[in-house]
Length: 92
Image (cartoon, rainbow, N blue to C red; front, side):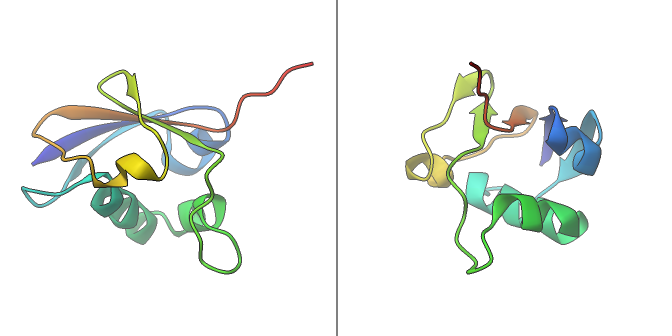
């Protein structure tokens, strides 16, 4: 199935503004993240700590709905879904 990826800010430097990826039918958000890290190794360094744990500070949206991390990593994906990845937002 095809998934549209939209990346913002620092993630855009790694993934580009938009990309389409093909993943196996029945995949979930975790599977997608792993696939993206395989094709874009710099993403792994941005998303995972030195100990291999997934950082929880970035934001993932599935079809414009914010996912709760890490609880929603198992969210099922469907053909033509759109996944957006944002770095943390801070202000002062």
